Image 1 (cartoon, rainbow, N blue to C red):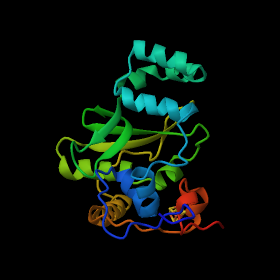
Image 2: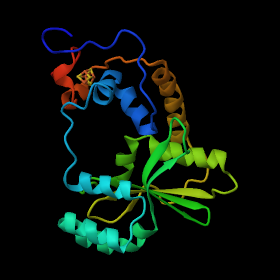
Image 3: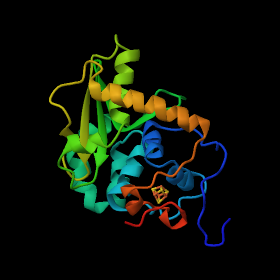
Image 4: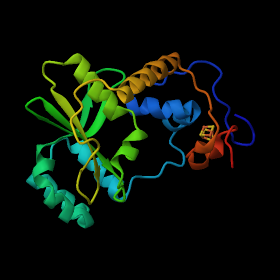
Length: 228
Ligand code: SF4
């Protein structure tokens, strides 16, 4: 390791392990950051707190019920009113839903619901989120999963509704109608996922310096980071 404590990217291919669709998006932004956070240790990554900690717990629970809601309300008293106001929906959701099973890549959504072949996917968001379309524009997983289901299960899946759900607020619809066919934004994500997965599976770890360096959690160990 160099004397100034900064790393160079590994020379050869690196085994990066399984990936979700959002992992691939993050890897596409900067392969070195992805590797440094995942393999060399998440230096600088903050422990989840506040609404992020609540979302992490909800995902891990898989299903919410009265007793679990009670326990969450004690741990997150500031969110108790929100949890209770939306408990009917929260109880119905498959939380931390991942699909397809045992596959790479796998898409994960915070909450999923199937009502007679119409799926709804919910993605929790920061409390101040007010533009669900803009929020989803920066993500790949939800639209990729909608396309995957429509392509692979056309008989069972009539449509997919996408929701962005700011913690402490109501769910916000991303579109006014369910998605019932593979659209341009889905095709774009499919192609990005396909191309990124190829590089990922080859084990390429390359820095991609740019604006993202400004908020990079491993900039202090990266030789390529731009300080602005
Ligand atoms: S500082 Fe920039 S180039 Fe280096 S790991 Fe972070 S995002 Fe990538």
